[in-house]
Length: 169
Image (cartoon, rainbow, N blue to C red):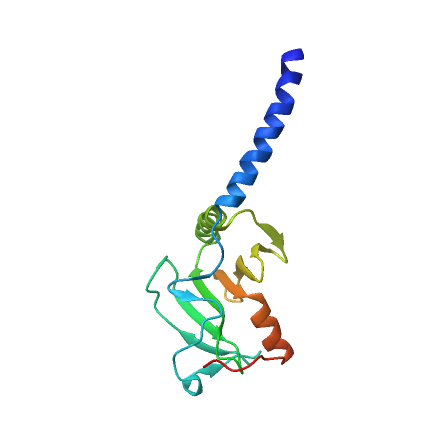
């Protein structure tokens, strides 16, 4: 019993140090799939569709990172012309397949960016004013969609509130 007590404090310290080392090793959230959050969108905004929140949307094929998703989308903040969100989604017919994909992406994201928390059914990792969220939703037709959203939280909030800063150059 005495030996177990003697190990408790060193194990607790080691555990805290391991968590701290993992957190320090985490990369900052800057963007994904070859795009940087907050970067100016180089294309013609007038040629893009606009979603219900007023953001411009454009599909793209990734130049970097995972090509495991079906759809890749940039959301461009109105008024600023900057990338507010980078979205990737994949649709599955079977829940088990969607869950397997989801759990693998969770592990990848936590390894890259550090510990997560659950918020409104999504896994969320925050890094200052940027975040990444991963979720799975069931569609009306019974399909399952796994989506990851990289977001510039400040840029998105300003755009949603209509408080755009100066336009991108």
